[in-house]
Amino acid sequence: MGWFKRLKEGVNTDTINKKEAPDGLWFHCKRCNETSTQKELIENFYKCPSCNLHVRITPEKYFEVIFDGKWLELYSDLQSKDFLDFTDLKSYKERLASAKAKKPNKEAISVAVGKVKKKDLVIAAMDFGYIGGSMGSVVGEKISRAIEYSLEHRFPLMIISKSGGARMMESAFSLMQMAKTSAMLSKLSKAGIPYFSFMTDPTTGGVTASFAMLGDINFSEPEALIGFAGPRVIKEFIRKDLPEGFQTAEFLLDHGFLDFVVDRKDLKERINDLLLLFKVDEGGEEEAALSVGTVVTP
Image 1: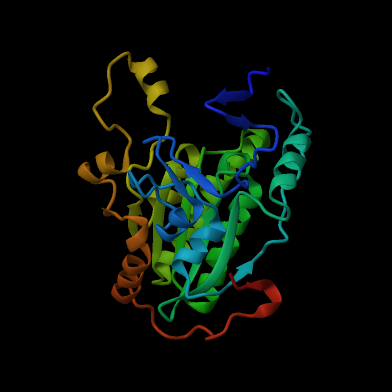
Image 2: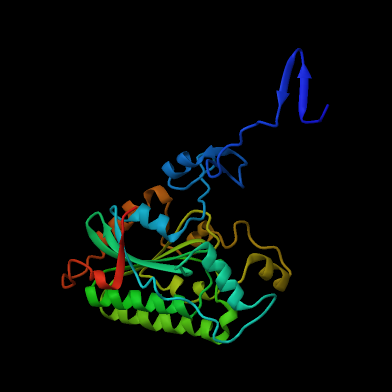
């Protein structure tokens, strides 16, 4: 008798016809090791129902959490190219093809405009699932265009950072985006239009060293890793143990680098508070031009 059968007290358990649970039905938390249904995870704002771990989510899911039902996606036609013929373990062209196969017509950042409790807001949200959310020339360009859109319509801007830093496959072109986005944000400041920087896990490297820390309000999700170099690199360099909780959102809050930390279930309400506090003078068009984007209804 095979190992996959069990005979006990006349009961024959045969695993040949065993039915497997459908993929995507369950969520297994990597931190607390508890299992819940995907439905429970979604109802809990993509957080573990047992330990409150904030699961990494895509820009589209953030748009669902924040906007009032629908939004207009902007600049989705912009795509990265391998203009340096860069190759490490494999070519940049291959990496881009692999990333696009998983997320067709997407980049490491998505830009959308919508309403939060009937108030206009432009959001540029990064996607860690696309080459580690790395900042290349297209990321910098989409952020710059999002800023231009905010300037034109006088809508507040929010950037949701989730990135491993600069995209090394684009070399200096990637590093140039730090200066480019910072300069564009100075225009937003001079125009009196608020910029909210929301940092999620992880926010590191050149993203932290540029636009992520330049908000009128800098805030974060709980327990997010935020820093320039990673804690392991820093520890090996200085050859000293790091403080407990080093580079977590709570550590940065205690040391004055963040204004507040917000649970994802309270995110929309806190953004609404910010929009009320930083009210922009009227002057932008009420409806966005549909020719520049695609209306999305979840």
